[in-house]
Image (cartoon, rainbow, N blue to C red; front, side, top):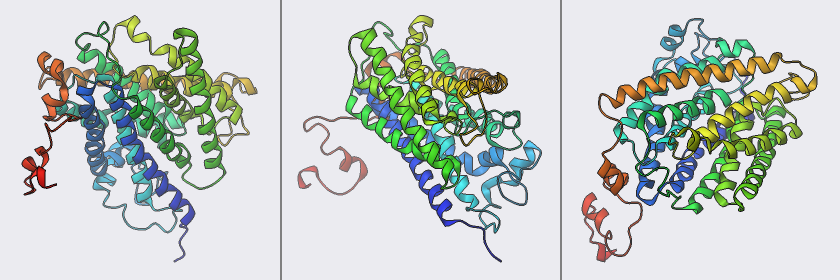
Length: 437
């Protein structure tokens, strides 16, 4: 039997999967540099913890909930029932054989989408830096992924999902990833309350170099995130690739201009934050706009997100690392601007308001954006309060003051002098003394 497998598409999809995986430690570095020295390991652990727990759940039932297929075993041939989609793919046991009609192995698509699930949950962690128990976070990550991310991914990207059928354009995750995570971040900031001393006590980033490295890794990996979502090495992936690049450039410039006018300085933290804001906003729109449209999406997102991070001081919620201001606001901006800037000459093939398409697409985009926002916010609040009043979500006050790294992990990110020279060998039983190394 002849196979339809395209080795070029397969190679691009597997490469994109690896790029998205790289984004997860990139996110950990980005967040880790922004917290105080006594909290950096916990932040790295929260992001990487989301990776490992969600990866396991994705294998057992997450993929089935989001992209469950019937006997044909290929995305787009879904079982028409939600429960049927889950049962057909429990443990992925029926997806590991080759499909002669597929242009890439189905397991490549499974792996690619697994990375989306893992990084979406990791994004939430930035809102509750310094104060969340690691066990409670891991419980939240697993439950939220099950009750929110997997169903929302089905709504947005499955051909039987209601948001997909509504005609909402979300090429790579403005709703399913960024609005979804941003709403959950807002919910957890409310559930856990403010850090001790916030907002009066300065809580400056401890390592801005690490922040910039993280932003660079995110930008690099995001080409897999967006262009990889074309699922082929073709014109769509090329257009999306460039739109992702240029929107990020203009977003960073927009953020820096706001900083300069408002504060008198353009900062490295602002540059890194603007980069991420641009990446977030162009994610849903990258297949629907021209490069000029992408530039507009970027600059609007850079300006609005730079302004939006101040909302936490107005409404008194402690979103530690501005997940709400960047991911929720950026996701909404990018999703709605499709309704204005989309053009039929772009791969998505839809005209927005500015190209004579009327308000129809804008209305669809608003429905998708705010439906996901509301669902994620409400369910995350329920899960968060359930954890808070059962096993407890927040560390003790004295532990927060002394540092969550020591309290939760019995480790420090940085050891100076000789204080920790023999600790690894003594604790791990390597049979070597420090002075012999």
